[in-house]
Length: 383
Ligand code: UD1
Ligand code: UDP
Image (cartoon, rainbow, N blue to C red; front, side, top):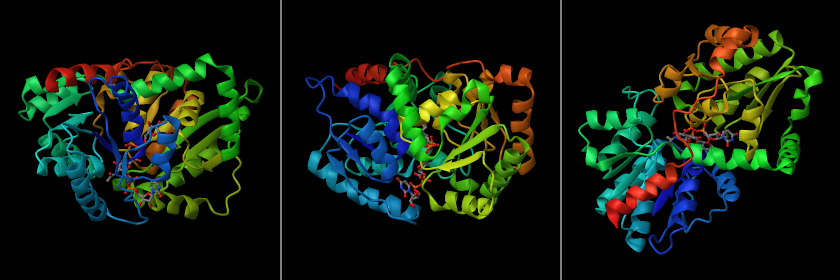
């Protein structure tokens, strides 16, 4: 059984589910979504044509971590009792991951953890994800680590090497699937351009004659709520007036804590080069990443995808569990300080040399074959 609940988990397990479903003689696959996300999850399920067998449908506006955890713990109890899976696969570091893993443990069902072993070693950054992933790791029997470093993190915590395999990150499998479709089919580009227009951003603004560039922005980390997000919004406001020839496009996460400061800080402003749009389905988002000049984000998954596209990423956090791209030089931590965000974005927009150093394509997170490696190892472990 594969259990997931949020947008990034869905993107990252979709290629694995598709691959598992190619082997009906080996695996009877059950897909269970917790529904921690709703619209943002449905976008991915529709795109990858995944129909869940179970949906706990737990999302409610304004619920807190206690609500999410307990609803999943109890909801999964019933699903596990009914299905009695041989193995449960969870992904990453969300509340869905940890609560589903704990629920499986209570019925002594072995857990396989995809994207295992990422660590900042600071339990409040990111919060609550660092603790979610540490606890999920303790509940796990089969660890699928994306990189050699994540394997090392697990071994430092005493995990038996025989229970860890390095697979690459399945996000690169998903990214390559989408990029291939965009690059090999020109009508896809036209379709995506039209879809983007309906969201309020016209990508044709970036045509050569206009000489415009695009800064793509996302943000949603709980530890940035409040002052952090206010700083981010004020910095975007300043940058957009400093660089009228640059478009700042921000597909907004649906969390009201993300949207409130945007509304407060940008109401009554008439800037023509800032676009707050609804969350994009994955295809359009990858298309926009590919068209961007640089990316400003606090997202985890985007730190893994953008280096593969040769796009510099400024990460609005103080720590990262993904140091591989930092070491490769394509990602830089800038925190949520107003002045620092402005100076680092300005540096990349103004200094072509600095930009070139950060914009080389590198891919420390995989080669697009992670799902196949996970399945090959799973066969050895459980069949
Ligand atoms: C969650 C994960 C985070 C992950 C992020 C990916 C936890 C604690 N957090 O954070 O690790 O990086 O997803 O985006 O597991 N909402 C909707 N519709 C949706 C999705 C969200 O309206 O489709 C709104 C709801 O008001 C919801 C709120 O966003 O209550 C917050 O959602 P939640 O899953 O609690 O937290 P995220 O910030 O999305
Ligand atoms: N993403 C998307 N549409 C958007 C913004 C992001 O499809 O409007 C994708 C992005 O490419 C990445 C994932 O969603 O694969 C990241 O999700 P998010 O930032 O919400 O979560 P995190 O990775 O931080 O857990």
